[in-house]
Length: 185
Image (cartoon, rainbow, N blue to C red; front, side, top):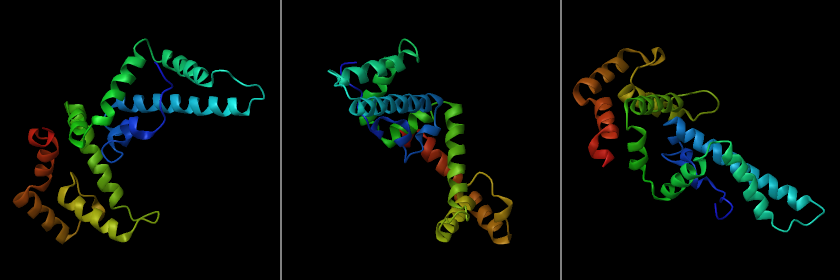
């Protein structure tokens, strides 16, 4: 570690894929928690040093020392793993992150569950959600949702879902697009 580790959301998995990537893999969440600790410690040390009556000769050295201590709690190769992610983060594309997320069956299942959660959030009518957004969320759920909630069942919804699933195969096409080789290339 040559310098104090830089602040900022650029290095977090959680900022990838429209702020949904941290749902993708447990190691991505661990990475983000580690950076929260590292950045938080740096902020706190700098605050305490600035408030201290005595002058600290090497404030950045103190920050680096604290960050090293945090890294040692994560194992012997924590810095190497964090640094490896740091090298890749600025160059990641939407497709590259999605490819890594859906690299195995657990990842594919997680991505599908996240899509269903997004649809559930979009159609939420509570807590001041815009009614137009909720309507779009309902339509999107009917067209591509894995399951249609009972609240959305009526004669037209069923007919629309049936037409979409049989004629257009929208969910299958969406899954193929997001999880297929062509998109992930």
